[in-house]
Structures are given as structure tokens and as C-alpha cells.
Length: 619
Image 1 (tube, helix red, strand yellow):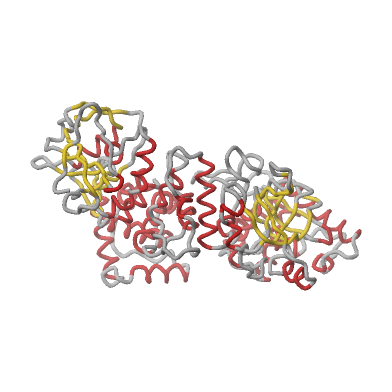
Image 2 (image 1 turned 45 degrees about the horizontal axis):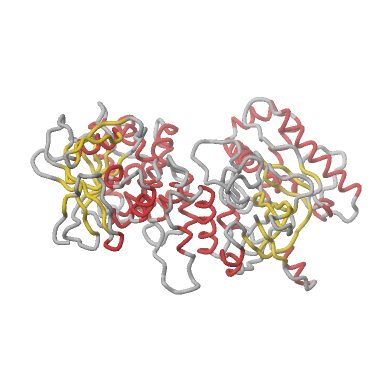
């Protein structure tokens, strides 16, 4: 359209938007002084008309939406979140009008249908804007000092990275060499710089899309202190990669790590993004509404190629706020599986439901994306890319389609590795305090191991290779299983590494108090200790027939199964149940480490015998 037109104020502030014209509302913010009430007009504009839709977007932290303030829009006094009013007061000009897009006002938040349609357009809304204005809150006493230090750091970064052009390569080198203590030459105020990033905006999920897709972003600490987002991201990332040089490392890690992740998205991952990586990103950031853990990342996905049968079903990512939360996650997980044609999405860290089975509208194979706060139900990931339990067999892509299995069921192909006959108590590796419970659990594992050797002549050869029936030392295969088969860098554990973990476990068994003192004085041993703790905590050790053993999630119990399925480098623990029709199905209980099943042994054994893979139906 030739020009934006004011929306009629009667009978409602909001009149319908035309989706065919990709209409949005803009807020024409009238001039005013900082203390004046914000006065504005709502306009309709079409994203198909670049001349009419000339505007800047506002990105900000909503905070508690129940805390309200007032604006005057189209002559009506309306109630809005106080954070929205503060952002508008900051961005308003004193002498000329300014066309702005701000979600709390430009979208009718009371109407879920419109909200869903407009949110689905947010990627285009931000990318079509002239600029993104980020309100970080008001300046504090240290803000100016922090920015002065930031600019000194920027000068050093620019000098060392050839005008920022080699910044990524420079940081990659530090990462590869683990050189996080390289000195910073310029003088800077650590506390003041830290305070620049101590703003809730940096931890939110929605801001990733807003910051990454906008042509440029300008940050505001109040109306009088401004800096560009790119500079903040570069400095934060530089400090993160030099964190061992900092006096207050822990504090910087807390504030700067989320900013570093944003730099990776804005500067490094600007090509093709995949749903799995974005779900991992969502797990590290905050969102008020559960659905937004998915909806906030949809706009970052690449557009479908248009080649039929070669891309995920786009209907799975439709933004609909009337959709049950579990269905939103279910469809996002299925999209990720279709996108990669593998099961990597089921191998990332997550918070499990209640007792590990399906809850409400969540199928068992769709755990919630984790929130950043620590929770002892979160299980540390193993780098399953290093294993090939399926021997590289690809999934049958047609089986992942909704029209094959139905929306709540995931059908896979694979083989049963074993049925679990015994599980240990929960392994809660002691980092401090009493270790009695962990020692008891470890001893019970050793007792079962010896019993299997004594009672089953056909048990796993690796068990017989360590047949100490009286020696209390932890044998190498069991130590390897407790590690999940990997080291601190999530590469496959070397023989030397496994022996060091054996030393740790034996020390905990035989003289824990003296051993912990030794750990504290030896950095390498301490690192191995912490890594082993992370890998086995909140899991159970299991044994199956013929000496099969390994590590499974806390929800597994005797009678459950270990399956190797195509498309997954690691086995899964499953529980056989009946579905709604009475047919056999499985509940998904999480990934597993199973000695003797991590490198295609189960697949090759069955194929050599001419056994066809079975259909594994997860519900």
C-alpha cells in the first residue's frame, strides 16, 4: 500500500490483519520528553511493501508482565507491561515521530490465533526492519566505565585478529590448544565489564532470533548510553576464551557464557541451522512459556528446499498457541529426526518426566527440553557420535512420517541386545560429603560381577579377563562402562585414561578420605574425578544374560530391554508395554552404554544369522 494508515480506535484498538498481505502493526511513537506519557498511533503495514513498512524493531526483557504501566494509543489509555513502556520511553524521539515494532503492543496478545500467525512471521519482521533496538535496562554507576574498558579490549582484539576478520580462527586456535590463560595486554575494569552483561536480556531465548536476523542491533543502557551489539558480543567471547586469566573467573563464566553462545549464532552459525542444534540452544536459555522453547527457534530454521520427500514436514513446526505443550515438543522432535534422518535428538541431555515414562500429552520419546537451572534428574550426555552401535545403518525415513505411525508413535527398526536382569541402586557420585552410599553401590556392582563370573561359564569374555574373585579392585571393563566409554573431551577413552579412572574408583573404595585429599592436590586426577562423577551420576549400572553390562538411566528396572536401533550410534533402554489397541509397544527410557554393543556387534551378529530387524514401536 502507498502509505500506512491509522487503525480505527472504535470499537476496538485492534482491527484484523490481512495474512495474505503479510500485514503487521507498527507503533508510530509521537515525540515527547522522557518524563511524558508515551503517545502513539497503531498503523497497519504490509511486509510486501518495503516503502510502507519502514520501521525499527525493539528487543527487550519482558520480565513480570503483571507489573503494568500506561500508554496512550490511538487516543485510548491502555495498560501494558511496564518493561514495554520503559523500552518505548527510551526509544522515543523528542522531536520527530518514530515507527517501531514491539511485540507486546503490535500483536494482540489476547487472541491466540493472531498471536500464532504473527509469531510465525517474527523472523521476517526482524529481518525486514531497518534496525533492531535493544533495551538492556537503565545505566548504573559502572556502565560508562565498563564501556570504556570494552573499547580498550576491542582495540586489542582488532589488532590481534586483523580487524576482526580472523577472530574466529584465533579463538579456534585457543580452543584446540586449551590456552584459556593467554594474557590480555590492555588494562580494563573486570567488575565494570562484567556488569555490562549482568542483564537478563542476554539469557532469554527469544532474543537469539531477534539479534541474529536483524540487519544490525544497537544496545541501550537507558536513553543516553548506547553501543552496538556486535562489540558487546566480541568482547564477551574474547573474555570467555581468556577466562583463566581473569581474577574473578567464576563470576565471568556465569555472565559471559550466554553472551558467547549468542556470538556463535550471530557470527559463526549464520549458514544452515538444524533443529537439533537449536533445541540444544533452547535448553541453555530462558523462556517464560513452555511452548516458546520451540516457537522461539522455528524462525531460525532454513527454508524448505522445495524438493519433495527430501525435507521434514513443515506442518510439524506450525506455531499454534492452542496446541498442547507436549504436542509442540513431539512435533519438533519428529521434525529433527526427519531433518537428520537419525536419532541424535534423543541423545542430548534432558530432564526426564517423573518416573521416566510418558506423562500427560508427552510420548515417552519426547522429554522436555531442559531449563538452565541445575536439576539432579538431568543426566550428563555421552558423545554418542563416537560410537556406531547401529554400524552405520540408516533409518527407514518413511517410518518417521506421521502418516506411517500416527502422531504419538515413533517407529524404528532394530535388534534386541539383551534383557536386563539386575540394576544397581542409583549412582550419585560423591563430589563432597559422605561417600558411604556410593561405596555401597559400587561394591554391590562388584559383587554381582563376581557372581556372574562364578555362575555363568559363558559370560562375557571381558569379564573373564578380569576374574579377581577376592580382590576388591575395580576391573577395567567396569570402569570403562561407568565412564560411558568416553573421556573429558567426549572422545573415546584411551587405555591410559581408563586406568586413571580405575585408580580413582579404587581410591574411593579403599581409603576415600585420604584419596579426596590427594584429588585436591593433583589437578589431572581431580579433572578425571569430576568427569567420572558427571558421567555416571543419576544413572544405574546393569547386568544382563551372558555377562552383558553397562550404564542406563535412573528409570530402568529388571525386565527392561536394551535395543540397538538404526539411526542411533548408541543403544536405547526400552520397556515393553501394550499400546491403546493392545499391541506390543515400548516406552523409551533413554540412551545406554552397553559393553559389547557399541560398535555394530549386535547388528552384525543378527545379520550374519539372517535375522531381519524388528519394528520397534515407541509410544
